[in-house]
Image (cartoon, rainbow, N blue to C red; front, side, top):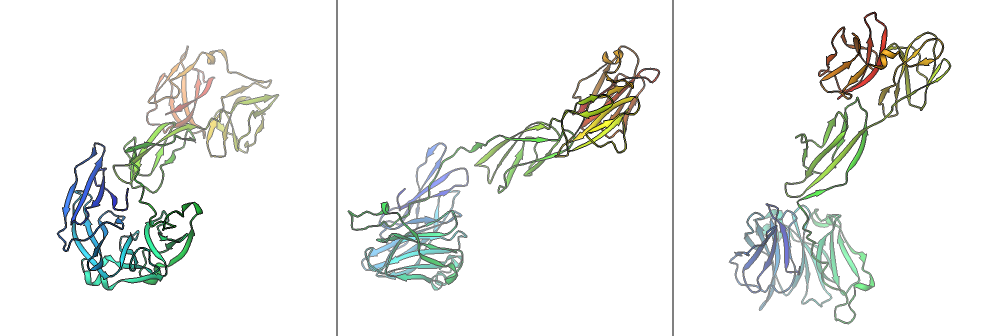
Length: 452
């Protein structure tokens, strides 16, 4: 875009390209959206006399509600600032006012402060090629009181330099081109009034390649317009992988700094609590036009402890952060090491914990004073399904059995003396242990299942 064009973001996922006719009171605003460029919205401000708009910048305020442009006259030599309101919804320019009319100077560069309350202006006398220049500040928060705005004028700097185009940087400081100078000036606190705004006249040194030695102007007037990038209204982001404990609720979180969040379950907070593995997604953004989508792939920590046997010593084949041995589903006091030496018959298992606090229970084994073996043949014919289970757990057994469901802490949860169809819908998601006995109370099988 040229220095006499600027753009403002619209209210309906669109942009406005704005310009001003030469020697005319007319502004032209072209709406640009996904369908293309629309016919211009013409706004005639009606200001007189008509001014020369051939040189200098047009700028929009950060909030898109104000426009500023230079109105220069050559007969008599006079320069004024034309400040207008802009409606991002309709493209209409209105409430145009003339500020700070000064004879025998030329104005080129403008910048609004990031908070929209101050206007900075570069001035030179009597032409672009003079060695006399100033930067002034006006407090436009005093509008529509034009006299008060003019009275607020503060001269930020005066020197034998020609200050020209201005631009707000990503650090919210204003950078100023200096014609015929290798330096760029900078206003460090542009939201502040008067001397507090702070200017560094030699802030940045331009590289040699930016000069134009074949022209009369060694260094240019502008720093370029802001870059308008038209992006898709929804941007997919990198998949985020995470692991959680199977039996513990866990948080997943979208990026910060946005005001609108919408998860696949309908929740609208930045953080969501989940209870199991799977894929979860969130749409988020600062408005409805430009949004991001993050997908979280959540898995469970796989502890899968396995009991290793060495005579009467039981141990785990892998190392964990914590251990608790069980006999017949009951916690063994003090049995919290990697190795446990058995002293009596029974069915043994170990609950292990990793560094994240996740827990899992090994399969049960039977000790008969000789070695550790699998439970009897009848037990091998007993099956639990489905696993993981939702609302119903089925017991498939060749004989009549009794069933006891316990949590991994050894607490009795459900007991059934005959049913092979257990209602488990009210159980908290997690890992549970099942003890299956025959009619005489002999243990046939011990197994674990996952409640979803």
